Length: 307
Image 1 (cartoon, one colour):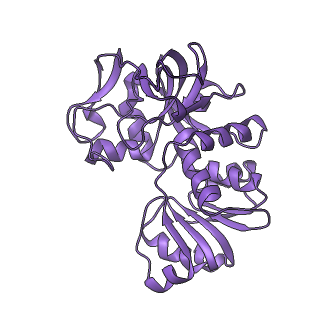
Image 2 (tube, rainbow, N blue to C red; image 1 turned 180 degrees about the vertical axis):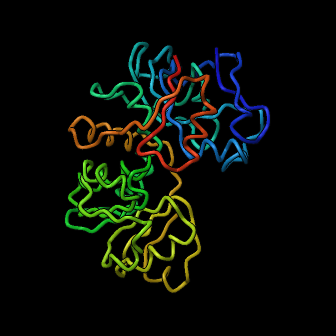
């Protein structure tokens, strides 16, 4: 099968197409023919450094996939060949989404919502599960709460906004002014231009912050939270002990989650969650996809078309 392989750590130029052996599913696994693969910040970070698990070259990147079941393991009853599925297999260990086939435990996937194309579906799992696990599983977001989402036009952000709105929250989002129209279209109640406005001076009495930026944003985000509020950090940053004592804080490391995938599918099927596709690239132009993602200027997700 064809796949994007890297033989060394480095920039986008280390990514190249190669012929590799097709994987075979184990007893509890399915083999999925990949139609589209999402591109995420963790991809380029893993390309440069080996990522959270210290991947050693050669390896194949990619954790967001949407495709068709090709074969199932002996004990799998959830799916059958021909079923369309999407998911986030094996994260943070190698899954190999930048290839024509992947294998993973069956419960790392869910049926692809019929209202989504494979490209759209591939944009959901990693960022959608990150947002869902932060907002619902950890913070228990509920009706009437005030939620601040940083980088609200980004991959995690634009899905976090919709999940919070679906549960009745008042959502404030930060993004450049040029993206405020997009923020309003996905349900943001109040948009803040981070380039011209200090959000810490503009908002207060926040129940939950979703922070995919980290760094100085961590302490500033804590300052706008009410006592007992939740600071959900996708990228950890420094926080004074006094803030940790009055808040619920946590580093959100997403994990494969069948119930979470089913919850995302339900929101999509109800018309309350929809991914936005910023750009698509064929598999052979993966380096360009990484270059675009690293600018930090896209609204929504970048997706590779695999077949």
